[in-house]
Amino acid sequence: MASRSTRNRVSTRSAVPAGPSSSKTRVQSKRVSKRTKPRSASTSESQGEDEEELEEQDVSEVESLDSEALDSDDVAENTKSNKRKRVVSVSKKLAPPKANGKMKTPKKVTTATHKKRKITPHDESEDPDSELDLAEGQEVVGVVVQAPKAGRVSPGQISKNTLSFLTDLKKPECNDREWFKLHEPIYRLAEGEWKAFIEHFTDLLVEVDPQIPHLPPKDVIHRIYRDVRFSNDKTPYKTGLSASFSRSGRKGIFAGYHIAIKPGGESLIAAGSWCPGKNELQTIRNNLLRSTRRLRRIISAPEFEALFGPAKPHPKGVRQNVFGFEDELKVAPKGVDKNHKDIDLLKCRSFAVVHKFTDKQVLSVGFKDELANVAKIMRPFVHCLNDLMTIQDAGSDDSEDSEGGDDDLEDGEDGGSE
Image (cartoon, rainbow, N blue to C red; front, side, top):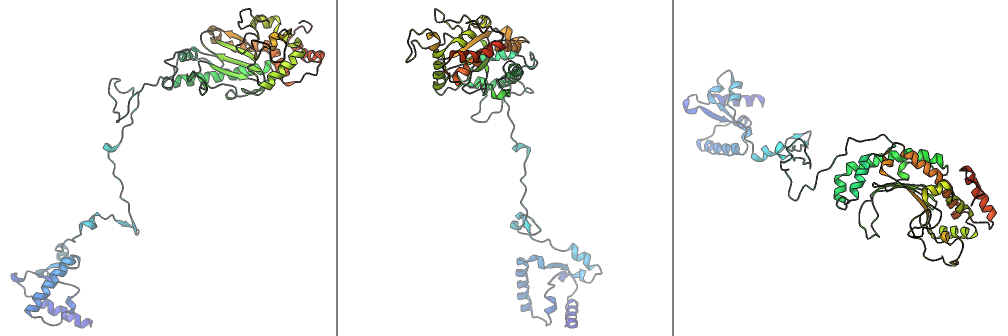
């Protein structure tokens, strides 16, 4: 079969007449070997039409060759140069290429025009009068005020920056959420300063009163945000910084110490028990009904009265010593004679004393030492209240006096004076 096929190819090639009239002849490589018999003119014409239709369906299988190139030596070069280009449909051109049998996902082309510009409320590099490219519905509500770099102090001290910020909070137009948000960097500076101050003061306080635990600032500092849920005053922020210390930290039933920084001479240190619970208040009154000797001796001490005033109610009801609080009863408690000799103490609902400082004292380097000195005078009063609300009286005045004698001896007080 191989020799016969070769013979057919030779005869077909030799039968092609050379000349200008037959300059190009289409030869189908796959089907030449099968043409062993001569065809008539009609058969050739019909076969030519079939070949043209087949060529249109699959052009890639047909090659166009020059008849003169069949007789030349360099057939391969002429064949390569005279090949028709492969026709590829539009759908095939748009199809993504395959790699390892998997379809490649076309990458998303991004240009610089599609990038969004990040808009900041305050761009120092631009002209402040230039307009910002704001999207629809956006507006500039204000410029964030940065914390001052001047006027800062060492840890354990209060700066003028803190008092200035608290002074602004006293103004109604400043004490709102929008203003506070724009001045938050200043508040964060004041907050960090206050935490450092509390940390240094705690070291001094635990030396003065060993019953106070050494807790981190976060466990004794109060939040600046007000609880307005049940208040008619909806002011969102307090106008001062504060912290409380007791046996149980910031909260609990025990008497303790409280310090607050407020500009305008309103900074203070206080000690005692503010509005104790019903059970604790009743226990204090029961012990006072038996004897008030220890408590009166403490609040009547000269150094105590020098800071908090005389140990008796003020004629005009002004705050003085442990008396004159707003929650004080107007009449005697239930079951107590209104003519009782200790009715002034029995009418109290809060047992506390307060001492205030000026702004100049607050800004001084030794302010925390002044607080510690006042706390030392307050210590016997705090210990006495904790005993009155937690220790049930045994029914003997002598036993109560002996319990309070230890505090008096520690402070150098005269245990025999009333």
